[in-house]
Image (cartoon, rainbow, N blue to C red; front, side):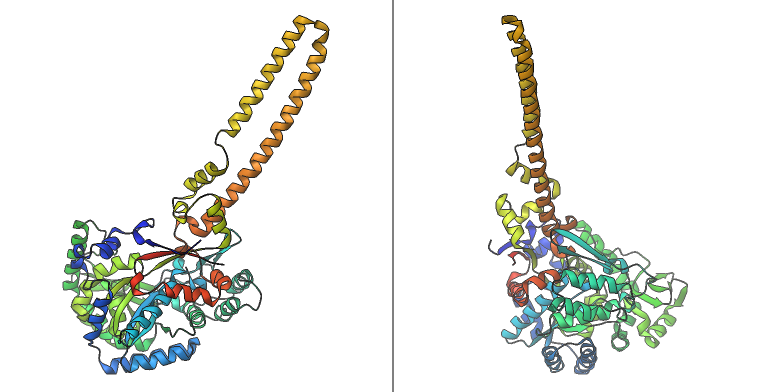
Length: 536
């Protein structure tokens, strides 16, 4: 089996907006500022507008963060380059258990690859990964699935008492220990590299944010990835002008976002974030959790807390760490903090940016080039053999378990074999009865002999049917197991592999060659492609 590249449109359930953004940009250019291509990135990089003092302050904070997470010399060297004028290629993801779904790793590697390509083009660039520690949806990050010996092994931490708090602050607690031990065991030998990385990061005293960061720092230690934790008080202080400006211009932003939502719907697309007449772009973080700030008749509120506009602005100025951006404002805050020229996102994120463009234009005055990440489906040696055996492609598995079962059964078991056994068994009995009747007419004394022979033939026929039935059942069980194996690996829980399965088991088997192979296919020329890659 050879590596194959598929257009993203051949994947199941891809948003129409993403497909048009990639293939019919002119139809969506009103919702974005740049076409997703290298020339656009180079143009953005040629017109930098980033203050040196902010660059210096942010680089200093990130240097401390990355040292605490255990990042290596390559990352520290990139932080020096960032401080000295390099632009940033950014991606990011929620801080999921054991690194979350595989595409979090793919996004990080894509940032590394594209930063290298820009540097080769004469634009000094560094990769940055935004850890979404401010997100408060604990259910999104507290579980992950491993693929192991054909089965989905699910790991899940309890919901606990997160109370809507930012997930980056929630400790893993003692419940992580049995999960960590079981996961490390599945990764292979006790002292294997991936198992050790997992053990070192996921300890009871760590939070979802620090554990994720430590694991990624070790996982990509030679690739120079800069990790960013936005929960840092100092980053909130630097970003305070953006948070305040989002409230200062709230009425204008709300009108334009409502107009953008209508324009998207009129063009046949769905708005990713619902905006109402009471929406703002901020959350308030308190002991009650992270709750949206709403506006009504000139007043602002979040949970039991309320402010006038002046009071809210004063609160943001004095305690910016108590406020965080919503999904549409988050990338604007990110790119206020960083000299971003390109952001690498997944399908849903591309849709977010069609709305975020309103905030970029009004609050920041610039927007990076948005690049859809390359996608990957990894096919192990057993799956390669089964696909070949049944004459299937990975795309056939994406049709769903029922369709896959039909294809496999049709390839190896005649659909009418059960009916054939029943039909022929009845025919044999009927023929034997005819013999008995005919012989009785010729010589009645032979009837007992015929009946005895008839019983023996009937007995042997039934035994033969039983053996055929058992063989058929065995065959069907084997086919069912093969169908389950392929589905669990290539379309787990009826979703793309990279959205459900953790990358660590693949990395444990594949080694550094795997990271190199993913990076090789993650460049700018491959945006919007999906690669089917055979692995050991």
